[in-house]
Amino acid sequence: MFSTELFSHRRNKDGTIVSICARCYLTVGTAWNESELPKIEHSHTCNPDWLFRWQLLSR
Ligand SMILES: [Zn+2]
Image 1: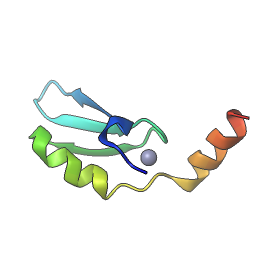
Image 2: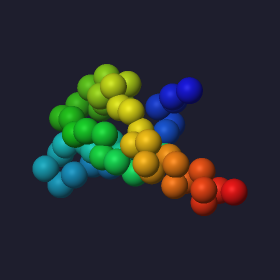
Image 3: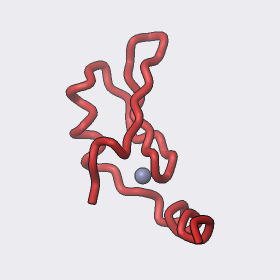
Image 4: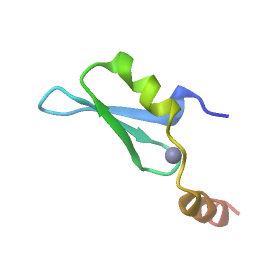
């Protein structure tokens, strides 16, 4: 299940906010307003290759 805590937000110098998935480390998206990020994050699907690697590492 997805939760917003899976994404870390970083603010750029230009004022935009970047959302990075904490599970697959992909940049989910960039937005001017933090309220736009959940929409972007909701449409994010983790990279299956990365998830597979994480499963191997966590064993
Ligand atoms: Zn992801």
